[in-house]
Length: 69
Ligand SMILES: [Zn+2]
Image 1 (cartoon, rainbow, N blue to C red):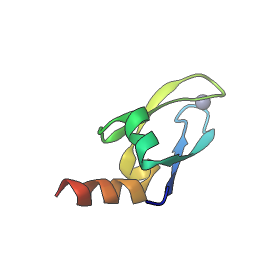
Image 2 (cartoon, helix red, strand yellow):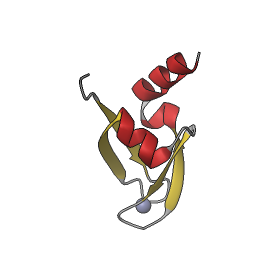
Image 3 (cartoon, rainbow, N blue to C red):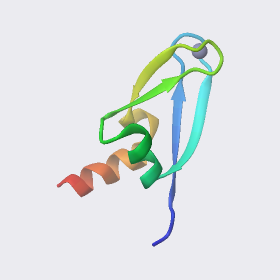
Image 4 (cartoon, helix red, strand yellow):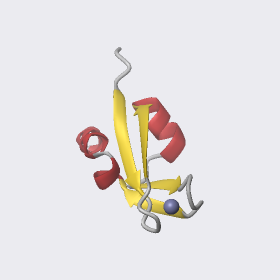
């Protein structure tokens, strides 16, 4: 199996600073679980916020839904 990496991009609602993570499906499951939201902490202002997976990583969200069906 190939280790596909998904690009997860989030933007802090307070300071607008964006964070990009490249994670494999295993890492996503480990880090975020099977929840529809990505919980992040801004590295600039330390605000904790959550972003819908649909927005953060549409590709993973799509595959996740396909698997669940
Ligand atoms: Zn911030």
